[in-house]
Length: 247
Image (cartoon, rainbow, N blue to C red; front, side):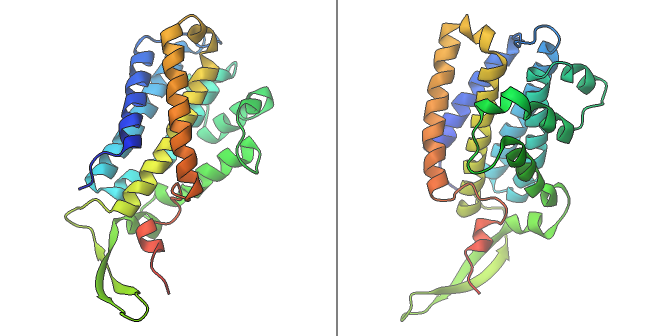
């Protein structure tokens, strides 16, 4: 079993800050219209992130990955309800689908605060949510997260290792898969923090310690995320343990 990594410990600190922040039901810049609904969605998203991390750290990798699409749906709903006038009442009546929520908050001036690499914010959010569609059902892509490579022989000349894929039934933590999911959670958490800063700007401006802590968390997580990105660690479309096999 792996011990907690530095970024896992940092993420826990960020999640604790978010939980304390929303326990106060802070007002968004939209006012009373969205405060309670935004806090309700944020609490749900917080539980999804925590649940994904706990499952991942226990070796239940396919179960952890199955939460990635619900996490993205919750993030889009939170962003729309906390930032877009009228979105809260639509969500409250059950009339705001996550895909529509994504369109609402990624349009207009809001998108200027986010700069995905190489694509527009609407394209980025649509693509990100779309790539997790196979994880919303019992697909082969989902279940393969519970396979691990068992080496059986090494070619002395080439150094290549051969082996078989085995079912992770015990379960054990598959390091490559767990690291990839952790890295993705780090990036997702940073987006959550950035949305909080944007939606609660007025409230945070009156709470110096909260704002200072948020800024510190963003800077630390950004540094970790950029190091992950350099090595492609956030790739979760294919289980890394499976992808490492050649031929």
